[in-house]
Structures are given as structure tokens and as C-alpha cells.
Length: 72
Image 1: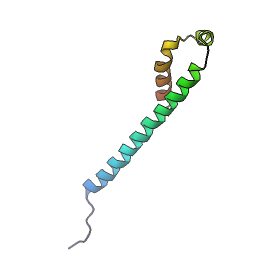
Image 2: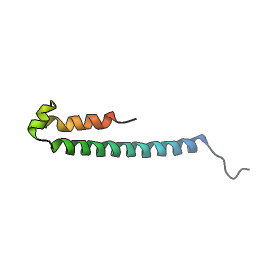
Image 3: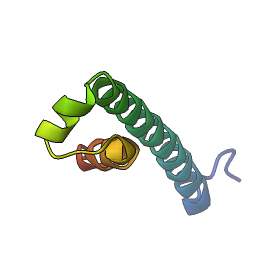
Image 4: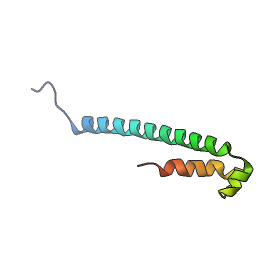
């Protein structure tokens, strides 16, 4: 009689937990990048935004796109 029998479900459960944690960390990282990018773009004047081809209403969508583009 074995005192401890490792099972596939136990290993899978641990991997699933790591995957969930990784997903949470990834989402938090994207959120932080989005905020930082948005904050930097909002610091620009309307003329500066126009020079780079942006309207103030496009900042949030662009910040989100840029933050997600940095994912590996």
C-alpha cells in the first residue's frame, strides 16, 4: 500500500494554478502599460497630438492596443 500516489489530476491542477496566476499577472501588466501610455499621451497638447496623427478621443484605444502589442 502506497502512502502517496501522484496522479495526473494533481499535476494538472498545479499547472492550472500557475496558468491562472500567469494570466492574472499578464492582465495586470497590460493594465499598467495601458495606464502609463494613456497618461503620457494625455500630457500632450492637442497640437502635439495632431502632429502625430491622433485625436484626443483615440488615446484610450491606442494605449490599449500598444500595451497589448508588447505581450510576448
